[in-house]
Length: 431
Image (cartoon, rainbow, N blue to C red; front, side, top):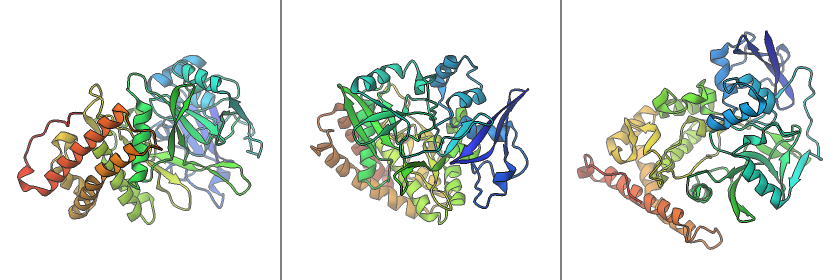
């Protein structure tokens, strides 16, 4: 028995996702293939008349869904199997990353208007939702809500009008992602808010974000880079996909040590997908160096994306950026190797050379940029910390992040400039 969902991109029906004997199948619509402006749904799903089998289909579509415990709780809410990607997309695939929407056959795609359907929330209702999210991720099952974002951490697509926060109903595009505090991770909201602000201060081009407080409850609001306001003042979607989706890798294999993408594959994707590619390659290099120096060990391939904002994709702003290394209970192992090393404390000059060679960069060029960032990052971080308008001064986690940054930058500079440091042994910097 086959079940089908219509796959829409923007306001166009582009194909059909089917579940046949427990396996996914995707086929582009003939009308879309003949459309003069037809574009592929994914770099891993090129335009073609032949259907894609489960092995080709699943990475992109499963990659739109929450992961881990969030996925299990949502499946329980709808009384479906946690392994059933199709059923989950049927229930929550109304507002996803990028411009993809899933409809039942014959269902009319909601057309955004100036009077978008938003349930505006009081402060008390915002706090109630923060309390409810751990039990009901994406508020799954609430009337009018079909919301999905990838990842294993609680988050929620919302609409922000500058003052009010609201829930996007019945296909209305969201404007922001609300990220509550991560359980058992001290001050995760301030940590991510500081690291994202630091990326902006370093001109790394992150998604815009800000720490918000409602009734003494902190959360991060991240502006969606895959949404924009058109000339009529209507919010529209931009398409995007993360690197796992573009490379055809299922989300449960997002870490390199599980067989997921390595940095060479990530750089190769950007080199193939973007035109001209050089600026995006250099931006990706900055993202990698920055993540290393701030101690973001969770920078796997689903935390990098391509944004389809014009004729060719561009590297999306960085996101999900926080210092995991300041928490002793979290792994010191990085999501992707630098050269042959997973641990920062073991990365010597020769491993940076291996990295540069592996991703197609000149060793001297990579070394020059690593040193530029390592020399400027500590002072920039301290200025941001002490800025009275930013609210980071006096925060213990921010102080630990800055201490770690200073230690990592000093160690990196020494290893890249002092030949005698080539074979030194360093413990993971203490904070």
